Image 1 (cartoon, rainbow, N blue to C red):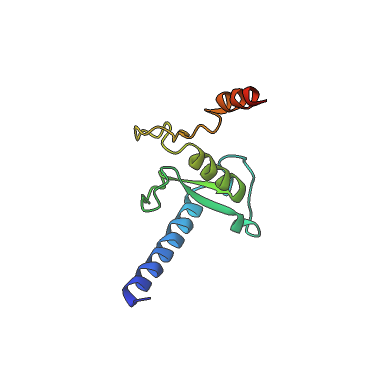
Image 2 (cartoon, rainbow, N blue to C red):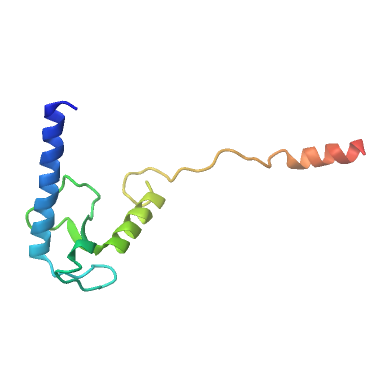
Length: 116
C-alpha cells in the first residue's frame, strides 16, 4: 500500500472519531429508535448514524447525525439496502425480476400429457 493511500485511511479514521466524539457531546446517550439508555460502560454499543447515508457529510451542528444502538443502526442500514432507489428521491425504481422461470410451464405440461 502506498503512503498516500495509508495517509487517507488514517485521516478518515481520525475524522470518524472526531464526529463520533462530537456527536456524543451534542446528544444524550440514548438510542434514537429504541430509546435504550447508555452509560460509560455500554457506550461502545452506541453508534453515530448519518441520516443521509453520506459519511462525508459531517456538519458541526450534528444535523446529519443521530445516535443509534448497534441493533437499530444495523436495522436502519438493512432497511436502506432493501429500499434502494425507492422513495430516495433518486427517481430510480427498485430493481425488478425479469426472469420468468415458469413462463413455459403450461406448454411443457401440455406437451408431456399429449405424449402419454
